[in-house]
Image 1 (cartoon, rainbow, N blue to C red):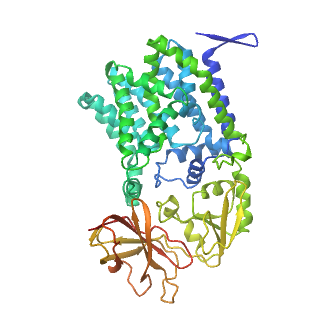
Image 2: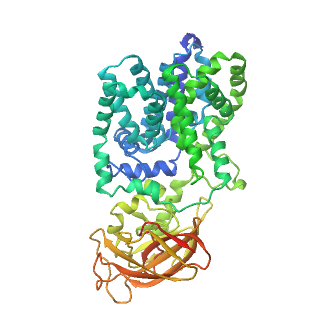
Image 3: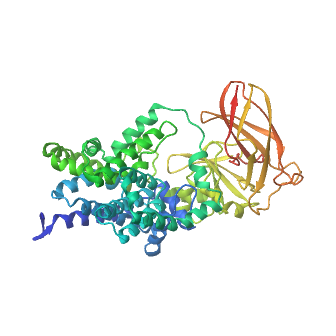
Length: 559
């Protein structure tokens, strides 16, 4: 074991490495503002549940546990800082590296571990449970025991509670070793994981499998763009290591897998990249969606580079540049060191001051946002806020909560980054962005009204009039004005082409008490003049508020 002399004492290199990693993680977590996703997960942690619209509950539970012991940014992130350290330790336990310095340089160069490891994100939880999964799997290959099977079942459930993509890891490992199906204990592992997932399945059932619909059917169709694929590939190189990522990916893929364990690593690595590469044909894929693949990548890359001494030298040659870039990025997260003339709008600085600016705009009144800046406001302010879903975007977690009910009939302030008819004032914020706002004396919104179409696929000739049956159901007890007094909300029709809003039409169909809740009523629209494939969304709104998403996507083919 190598040692480093500190104040006259010979301290093992391993202890220095892990001690510095933990210390830097705590410092970073304390002095860096929460990112948007972290602030959103923190808000979800205030409403613990077995399920959420976008993500499983593990990240929210870990944030909640951290805040029980430590308040503020550090408490939100502390468990993830520890999981980050343990993930690296588990990699070492699996590898038992003879060359610890090479191992330390590799993990220090991997961006998702060294730059993003302190963040309270689903990815960091999944990375940790992926590391424990492969540690248990390697032992299970050599020892077919009930205890290991049970531990694997618990671990598999933890992976799925961390991120839905955890299922891909299980699938690719099983694909690499079909003989697992011959083990009786393997079915015990499957059975236990399914039992542990029952609460989440019941939550989904109770909410109409809303997460499944959100991820598979709630997005507007996007045309294939080669830039999506190029961005994905570049993103994989960057998160693998700002400078050495290409080298690590090459080494991990080039390594010839020996035995079933390394075969599982290789299948997982290539399978994850291949799956999301194909997904770029359908939509834009975020680079960090493959974050759990960093575990097999590090294991395979170290094994290959340790046997290729000449190639391994390049890891050390490039390390100073790589670590300087890592340090610069992490420093910028904590301190706004870039010149003001660069005018970068970032997710990292001045949000607490911004929240106070929004408080002054609201003047003690609840705020209504039209974008995800609400998550930062919720974190840095004690005031009440709500977000309206954008007709061109997707439904949000806020649509599942009762925040909207508390605001009905109250005086609120609507805040938007875009000028609207109701936003009569504006403010140049400390972020360098302009926000428009206006006061609504009697707030009404209708995201609790769900519109269903009897037909999910429509066909018409260009310019032809179409009538198709719809019905609405009010999903809560919110006291809303559905009377025929001229202020009843109306159904809006929004037609999209290739993900872009083509036209919005305010129909003459009003939702009022004269119409029975759940009754089928014809909605009349006119098909676009150009042949092609279109998508329709329906909204419910009055003349004061922007339209929200109140229906699933309806497909329209114009011949």
